[in-house]
Image (cartoon, protein in one colour):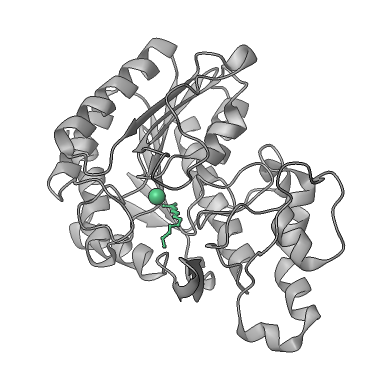
Length: 346
Ligand code: Q9C
Ligand code: ZN
């Protein structure tokens, strides 16, 4: 198995996020990816490589041009407002909610931050673009590996991606790595692909990107949006629209769900994927389903992740694994690499 590792991931290092009326230290920290890399090397599971470079046109298959332009220059624009901004991250504070217009891109930087985001929990930093850009290259490299005949490849990167939409960031995500990988597979010979999202949080960005399409099946197992982030998407009645009708499967589960019930949902989602007749699988691999996760509510244990990997392998599809969330920093390496080891050894 090849792992494509984003060696620039630590360039994205948010300081504070807005939570319950105050700024608290970020949960999405560089040490997360460091722990996964260290554990991967300790167990000697395959090789670790730098990603290949893909053209910006590949990003534009998923993201809007005006969003990519905004993201690329956002840090420079932020510091141009005030040189002292170089010492603090940018967070949005105003949004074009219902009745307000999203078609005109404002000149004002704060207004553009709000137009292109969905929460105040995702700081934009000096290295956000560089890190996210190379993260996209990791996901695309993993997808390319499948096109060239590999059975499995791992994109080890941060920031994560599955909350990012075609034209917005949020939920610690900026570029939708899993969506980019799925689209790359579509553009390079796979007639149908599936994205299976097993992060604790619903993959609202990925769902929205593919919601009206039947060529990319989206299935997600996640905390019920009535109580869990991202709150406004991820309900069971969201089944797709137009030609995408029937190609979206949401399996929300209550806080406190343990492995047995979670595993039944995994079986259910893989059955849906099998019925759809796909040629490749992209897994949004969030490790925040772990019982020790500080911001999540499921109760999976470290050994359970070996079984998750085994079950994913049993789907019998060429598979791209994309690292997403998981905030129990000390355990995230062992847990993620358990999925990989379960997959490889099965
Ligand atoms: N202070 C991913 O797992 N905010 N994103 C939670 C906790 C958003 C999680 C509030 C959580 C987003 C990729
Ligand atoms: Zn998550």
